[in-house]
Image (tube, rainbow, N blue to C red; front, side, top):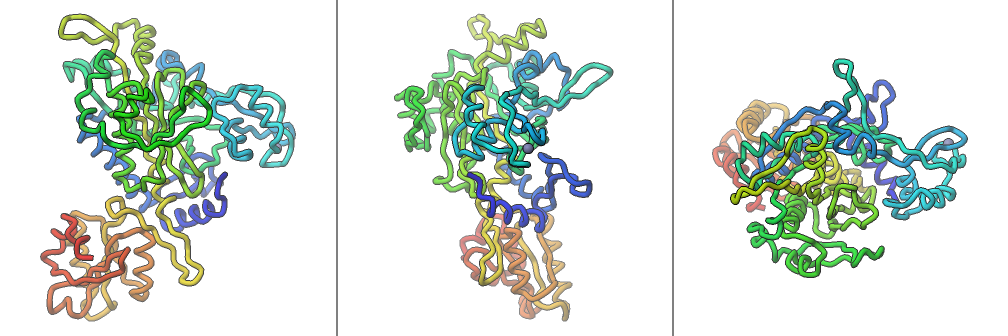
Length: 494
Ligand SMILES: [Zn+2]
C-alpha cells in the first residue's frame, strides 16, 4: 500500500528544493507521467548515471548511443507493435481508464502481475473508480504502450526500450569487437504511452533507461571466468521453489544458487551480481534490497530466466528498480527473420551460431527517486528542519561555502575559496541569514561539508569544515583543502 502522507511530503520537498518539478508542464496544468529535473535533481541523476557508467566500464562494457525514433518494422520484429499492451478497465460512469493490474495492487494489496482476464475482473469488481467512485465495466481491453509518430509519411514509433535498438547494430558490433563475448550499454530516453500513471518518477511516459547487453555463445554461458571471482558473494534471493507462489527470501551465495538450480548459468549469475553491486555502491542499505525471481506466468515472452532487483521504498513499498533477463536468441532470430540478413557469429572452429543475449536493464529515474525516498528525513516537529542524508558519494552538492559575516572582507575571501573549489567540485555559496539557517539549507540539499570563512581565516589562511552527519568541525589549511576533499581524507577527520 502506498504511504500517501510521506509521498506528499517528499513531493513537496522535491519541488521546493529544486529536485523534481511536475507533472510537467506545471504552467499549463501538467500531464501525468512527465517530470523535469531541477538543478539539484539533475546533479543527483548525473551521479546515478555516472555510477552506472563506472560499473559497466570497469567491467569491460562499451557505451553506444542510438536513435530514439525508429520505423515500425523494427517494432513488428521485436514484438512490441502487437504485444506490448496493457490490460485496462474503463469506469462506466466517468469513462476514466486505468491499468487493471496496478489498480488491483493499489487498492487490494494483492500481486496482480500475470493474472488472467477473468481473474483480473474478479478483483476489479471489488474496486470503485478512484475518480468518481463509480463501477468499472466488466471488460478488459488492450491498450498499446507505443508512442506513434510519422517520418517521411511512414509510420514510426518512439522506442519503448533501448535494448531492441542496441541489437540492430549487432553486425557492426561483431565486426568491431571481432569475437564474442562482448558487452555494450546505452543510457538514453525511452517512451511508453502509460495509461494514467500515478507513481511519480517510478512510472513516466518519458524516462531514461540504462540497459546493458552481453552477447555470448550459448555454449559459454557456464564457462564464465568472471563468475569465479564473485561466486562466494551472498545475495538476498527471493526465490520461487519449483514455481510455487510463496516466495522465500534466502541470503545465499551465487554458488549455492547455481547448485540448487535457482539460477541457470554462471554468466547470468555474474550479471545478477553486477546489478546488485550497483545498488550497494549507490549506498542503498542491504536490508532494503531483494532479488526476486519472476514466476513462469509473469515472465516476458522473450525471457528464459528473469529476476528483478526490488527496493523497499518508504513511499511505494517493494519496487522493481532493475531487471536481469536471459533473452536467449529471441531478438537476433526475430531481426534476422524480418531484415532477411544473417545475424550470426562464428566460432574458432568455423561453426556458425546465433548468440544469446543477457540483459541488465536499469533505468536512471527510479534509482534517483529511490535515493530521495530513502534518504530524505522528515521535518522534525520541534526543530522544524528536514534533512537529505544522501550517502556522501552520491550527494548532488559536494560542499557549501559561507562567509561568517557579510562584511569585513569575509565574503571576498569566501568567494575565492568557492572559485578555487568549483573547478573540481559542485559548490554552493550562501551568505544570507544566520550561519545556523545556512547549515540547515545545506543539509536539505545533502551537501556533506560546509566550509565557513571567519576572521581567523584572513590571518591564518585556513577555514572551518563542518561534517553534515556528525556536525563536528575541524580547521583545514586552504592549500590542503582540495586534496583532502578529493582523496576522501576529509572524512577521516570526523
Ligand atoms: Zn469514474
